[in-house]
Amino acid sequence: MDLEKLTTEQRNKSTMDLDTLSTIDILRLMNEEDRSIPVSVRKELPQIEKVVEAVKRSFNQGGHLIYIGAGTSGRLGVLDAAECVPTFSADPSMVQGLIAGGISAMTVAVEGAEDSFTLGAEDLKGIHLTEKDTVLGIAASGRTPYVIGALDYAKKVGAATASLACNKNAEISKHAEINIEVQVGPEVLTGSTRLKSGTAQKLVLNMISTAAMIGIGKVYKNLMVDVKPTNSKLVERSKSIIMQATECSYEEAEQALRAADDNVKLAIVMVLTHLSKEEAKQKLDEAKGFIRKII
Image (tube, rainbow, N blue to C red):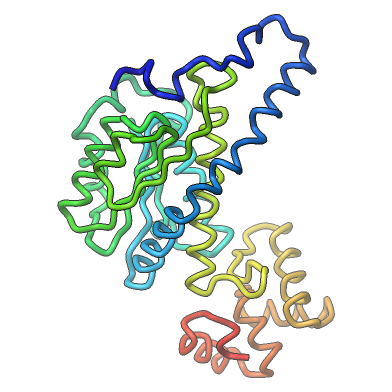
């Protein structure tokens, strides 16, 4: 597909005089363009739902969610994957982000990496992809060879495959079982898909990982009860979550967190049921991590 035919590569008629505008007018214009992004994402909710269900199936059978992309798309996948560890106490392998050129490409572009049809497959082989996993290929243009090669390999393995593009009738959509195509229109700065396209991708990835984690019991009400208290801020947040979930005092929350070996979810169950740590853990295991199934 020729680049000029891609919506993400076309010139935005509203920003033709971008270089003549004052700073505040540039900001207003960017803000106005960004307002359309959630509307575009909303149109793809049925497709996003399908991806979430596929990811939940993977998680429930011990599989993983693998994001794979190049440039901004790859970086956003790596970012979302990394954030799942502290937010949901997820094992680092549970949600993984692969980027063309490897981790060094997070800060410095690796020439030619995204143009290879074989590197994506090699990267998936490197993490020992199985049929239990879900692979989500991300490419604003929808035509990145690295992503296409990865999706084709994932299909051969038997993994669930999905794609996320910011153009309609994207090439990567032909290589995935489920396709999400969020068309946000021409960028404020022509071809700079780190802008509206990147924002749309970030919104979609937020939805997929969060909804999937909710679906496997890592949230109680609207509280992140599987948060990992790895620093002083998160320790205090953990106590606050226990207090909000159980209506106990700060001192009781602090004591429960300590008794539960810093496991917030376990502490909540202990407070709500007055069970010992061992008994509460057994109840959680039986309920597959869903607090509501216990109380």
